[in-house]
Image 1: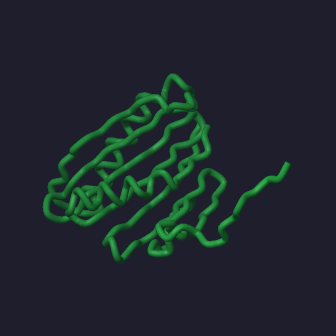
Image 2 (image 1 turned 90 degrees about the vertical axis):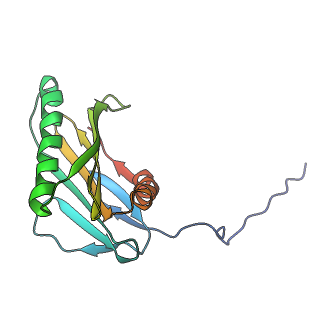
Amino acid sequence: MLYRYSVSLTPPADAVQTQSHVYSEFTLDLPPTWQAQATDEDNTVAFHAPAHDAALVVAVDFIESGADDLQALADEVITQRLAALNEATPGVWQTLQQQVRPHRSEAGLELSFAAELPGQQVALYLGYATPRKLLHFLMLCSADRAAALALFNATVPQFKPRLP
């Protein structure tokens, strides 16, 4: 019996080259257009994509919480993150959507929100609350909602949290 096969050593033309950022609590594969930025915060990494006028901040807060406390904690995290937007960029931020739901792995809760400072910025947030940690993924983009959502949706699948 004869087996025939071919192997291409050339990546497909539409393949996007990425750089892997591997941390103890998550991995993140980003195109080289995302540039790492220095932060003063422990357990925080930040990136900037000048071509998209966007910033990305991923942070981890280690906690000790019982599973019964997670829903209240998740609600408080969203409230605090929205308040932090108001402090960082004063103005009337409008919350477009917010949600807390069980993570598909049942290891904790998945948090999300979308907020807008009309005519200036869009903030898209994805977070995870487990009895061991809070993991935050925040993208800040220019005022174009459609472009912000497209960039967020292209980036989030490359973010792989390690839960719990």
